[in-house]
Image 1: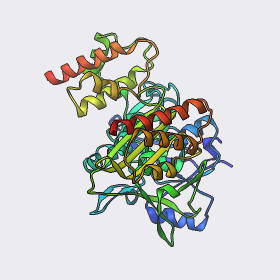
Image 2: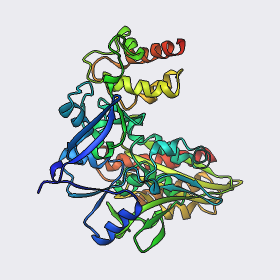
Image 3: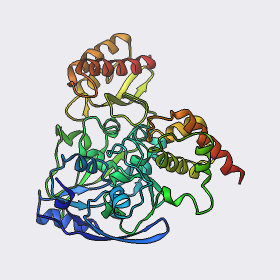
Image 4: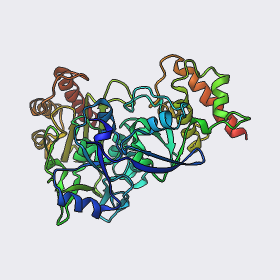
Length: 284
Length: 160
């Protein structure tokens, strides 16, 4: 679609956005930092003719620290997240993921809400959000609702969001427990590459027993996923080589990587297994 | 059906600029085609190479990924803003001294990314330079001379 056919509504505040989505649900797409849409527009693959420009709407940006949770405005850029000292301290995997997303010029423009809504299975921040048990806030003219992020993606680019809703916040639950985080992305090069496979784990341990664990994965399924059966197998059990072997078998059956331009099924499966195994072995 | 062109007003290299165009026109196309500022280069056109880097409100961005509607009311600075009529910027000088440019396509972006780094960290180590230039691809000079250029620029900046 050529730029001369793209109609843009320049929203001044969140009410503008919600009113328009309420009046004409399904007609409008959201333009945030533009780092995905502009690429598709230039390639000629962008098909939606009506955009609402939300860039610069202050209601949608900003990071708020509450007692039990951190609220990240959907329009927060990766750079804003990277430079936030409390997120850095309590949610280091999100920082790492944001620093691995594109380059600095992309991080200055790309937003966490856009990263979620673009719904690439290979995006870098979703595995971290899944491992942290994040929630998201969806807002329509008549309702503000919260959803666990783990329940948001249903299939490839298919999400539990209504046509009159917009993603407004990402919420991270704070904890005072001693936690262990592990994040690793495997790409073609260290910087500025798209993931072949990515894993994020947060767990708590009591002596050598795993008391809680969440495992988020990217680029190994049609969407970012948790591997609940692998988590259940590990939870409540004492870490041993035998347990790790069982977990590896379980995760291999729980993920569904594909062949594409960046990698292939067999390699992705092997990498996902190795990432989990190496991490758990390091805890023995 | 054609959409309406809109009026966009912004500060470009310290000059008030007004342009009427399609809202989704890329900033790089406005700079190069409409305003004839061809110092900003287009490499990949998809945010991978950093050749089209400019500053918007002091932040490094890829101008191929910014629709002009998002430029309204902002302050934009391009490579043309670096040298005065009489004097080169110290980063430009360092790139010349160290042969940090060969074909020159990546150079404006490299200089802007270096400037973004040196503004927040005047004395970066090699790893920090590499990390901060990771979004800028060069296909001919090789990166060592570019690293040398940034290191010298860092020295020149700290001297003054």
